[in-house]
Length: 279
Image (cartoon, rainbow, N blue to C red; front, side, top):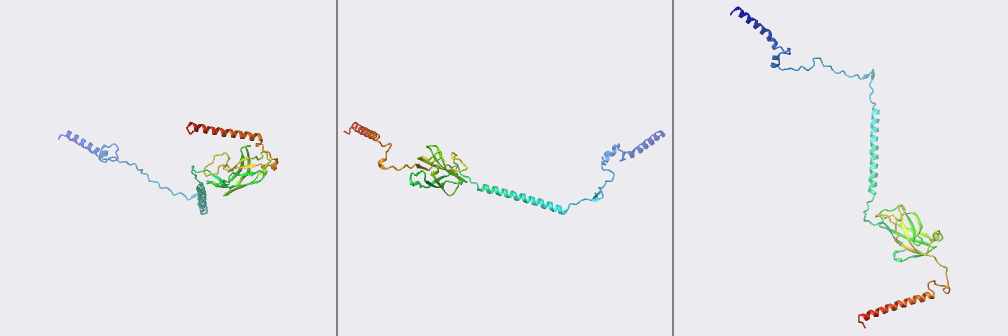
């Protein structure tokens, strides 16, 4: 080998030898061999030593922390417990009251009849009743179809002749058997004096009205009993008695009308009998 060639080979070998360590240097960031052979390593962890949390001081400004007083804690717990019990008790009472009220309320079917009265004084079989104005009159009755008892009742007597209403009792307590005593002498000389006429007894709920539509099971306006009142006349001997509707002229006219009616009826019978060949 020539000296020139030998020198060139030595220079080339020395260049390769000088560059060879850099190819495997791990600290060289631009070395491609490092990345290929060893791969990229992520050194994200801090090299600084981790700091440990210092324990908090149990005192602030040299004063110890204030701890909860067990008495106050127990008192608060007891108060909360008592409050909870009170609320539970009140809720229970309110719920119980509401349940009791709801259980007491009645549900009445709409097809049930309204309440009324049935007279026992006078009895229903006694027939029409007439009372003298100025006397005491007694009425008594039982309730029928009554499912809701009214708190009180009003009792009236009405007359269609003078369109007057006479108060017998107001806000009378309700009993199993109703009863009223009426002193007719008090209404004898009132602004609307009692007449010799027929009257109707009214018994109805004080919280309702006479013209109110009766509800099922509730007391309606009981107005089925009618009675008569009359004004007594002075005694007149028979010989002095005169009938305004029984004079002679009136009697003659009545007899004539009766005779004509009988004659017309008899003639009609004869005509029909002859027409059918009875003669």
